[in-house]
Amino acid sequence: MSLLLEHHLVLLGQQVSWAEFIGQLCALAVVFLAQRRTLWTWPVQVAATVLLFSVYFSAQLGGLAVRQVVILAISIYGWWAWSRRRDPVYGVAVRPATGVERLALLGLMVGGTTVFALLLDALNASWAPWPDAWIFIGTAVAFLAQSRGLVEFWLVWLAVDAVGVPLQLASGLWFSALVYVVFAVLVIQGWLQWARAARAQHSAAADSAGPGSGTRSAA
Image 1 (cartoon, rainbow, N blue to C red):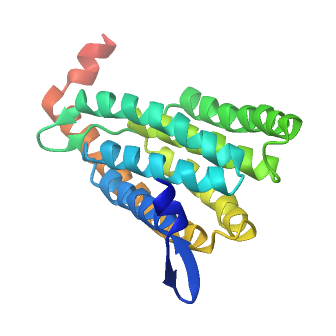
Image 2: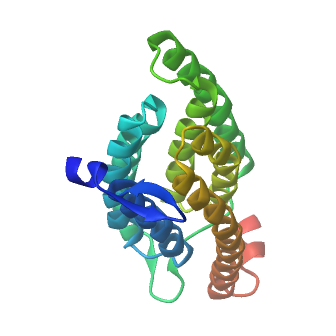
């Protein structure tokens, strides 16, 4: 791993470590794979977490480094969860979050960010504890929602990107910042694709239930 950190390539006149380059490419590939709801999303994500952990640790971004460890654990869970929710026609089953689930996601984002930012500040583990914490918690919440097939996980990613781009630039990780911008575009596309897939799966489920099923259930 040290070889990937110590050796660089030059992109647009700037040096980028091979660890950052390959790790961010893997992370970018995860977005494409998630859009298509394929199980390959998760093993590629595992590779990205290993590489990016070394990048952020060397840049002294404690929250972003620890985030990769959390993502690794959630990726293993997501891999298992998606393998249990595959549909031969529509792929991995996805759906909109319920009102309670949306409130839970928001509560995790706000409460988790506050607690983790205070922890980072107390431990002097990050020079930017609040944005670092927002990205850490937001990423964990996004992957958790993704593993459960919730369409809203894409919106959580947008909130992460909004903070991630300026933080990466301030850290001198300009290539990672550029990748975050590309992420934002792909995230919007993914949100639209998952929303359409959720509607299609809901319609298919309603058709298979047959006409009048709602009346029988209500009775």
